[in-house]
Image (cartoon, rainbow, N blue to C red; front, side, top):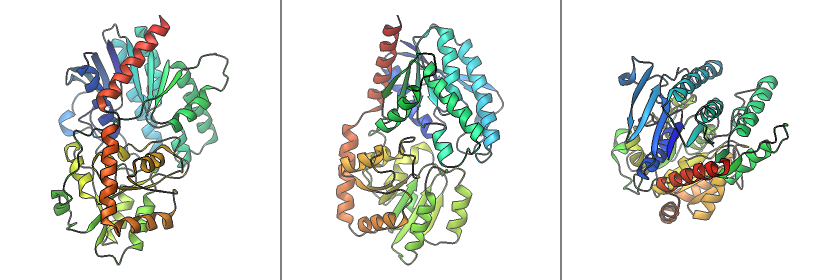
Length: 415
């Protein structure tokens, strides 16, 4: 098959979405499919186009054997929502033009969200190339933005909810990461709008890359670089945004100010980065580290004795923190502060890889951390259990095959 993939990020961009889509593209091309990708120039780490990619609005090249068109992303400060929206609109417009100009025929279009506007672009491209559209939803927008208060205007909320429903209905299939997200999306497409059109809603969980992420010795170069020594490291590694309850990490560090054998590490970047650096400047047991290159992620994960996955209340059916699967692959235990019965809470319990506690509950988080910090042997057992679970989970190639099969199924249904 020949496939057109529309994604906001692709390696070497360091965004989690780029890591996921890059592996899926590799799996598709490895299975013999011809893939063309329309994406942005790398910009995620510093929220500006990386130095070696500057100077041109459009660049063409390859990702493995896939052909790639990279476009200027109009990057802005993550805290400026209006500017970010305009940047996404600008990128979507360029991506639409690039996709329309791409030489067909294509057997299917796969569009990745966020941004939600890529769904509309994917629909236009699927119509242009007369093929089915698969809309891949990594996070449900605007639910997450509304829940964290990033969007408060009733008119804006109503508009984005209308756009979300309209986008889903124009897809032939919507893929989501968990049953929670599937129920969320299904409720919205079941609302009558007079079109009578309803997409297939399919759960396609993100994969676990157990080849590149493996258990490793905890005494890493990363520990030396950041003065962590042999202390027990409790780590949050990921996006520093409004969806994550990062104040819980600071509060837990405060509870353990007198524990000289224990240090909290926050590794990542985002709109909360400056707040967390300011907090770390006043606390000896809190260390904040910028995003690390993709090839150092296994080392970063191995440096922790215990990982944290804190997601704010109410986001369990809108977002699935992909970092969970990487932690399991690294053979490290975790404490998930997240909605009860959400995908991550179920995985943690099912795998026996850590503890799940209620979201935004400092007491519960601190108690769970203390229980596991006091029991190194239990942490080892949990880490080993998590690794076994990860090894039995879907690989990147299996997820790629699932997408190829879905496109083929839709093509037959539409013939």
